[in-house]
Image 1 (cartoon, one colour):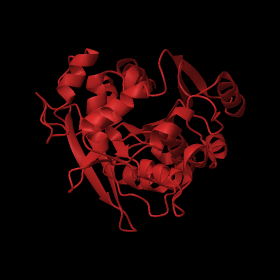
Image 2: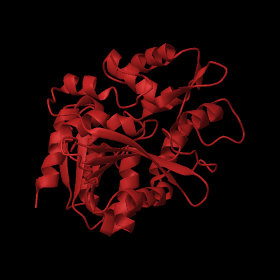
Image 3: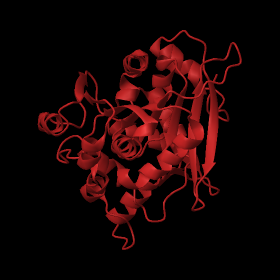
Length: 317
């Protein structure tokens, strides 16, 4: 039985779901004060529990918009290597940004601060969606911190009329609810989260109970999108404009400046169209492109296959 007060007590059930028999890693919540008074939060996983080891991470993960570091739990279990999963600013337990500037180029310096504090070697830097664009900016600015860049189901020029449109309607909904069960039902209605058990787990990590008893999203993006959809003047852009803001940074320039090997992993039923992939291939001709039989959230739908693939990256000279 998982303990809701222990954020790592769900790992045993997740390992069983994906068929990983190895000992569970030791999980630790990390918090880093930033220069402007905000904090950056992350999860560090160490699989060396038998000998009391404390290996520093070799793979660092950045999640997508509206998610949090726990989206990588099952992938990290399959990976079997020391890993770091960062809550991007405005998500999970990291502070919200007052300027609501949730774009890769703006978020990259906070990630760099985390890598400098929590790692001691160049990383395989893995980013999903918004995290992928952030990872590209990090790799472009600080090549000394990145051995390999893996971008999952995102390009800077993604077609907003494709699968990404479902996020517009989902995030523009209510931001507070009577119970987490209501959030679970909404996610399932939008086809998000996979199984009910996985959705319940995801909602638990992505929401909090307020003092008045209502449940709200942890991440800032949903609050901004809902406020703008309701016509509030000070809100950040909602709907396709909000997603365009995420995508409309210097992503292509960042990818062109990356000196580390680049791999794009796309979901066969994900957000990228064939035109998006062709554009990526033309603009980043040295990159490898792999297609897997899943949707946008590869790390949640195919965590074992993704973890094993990333482990192979780590073992490649």
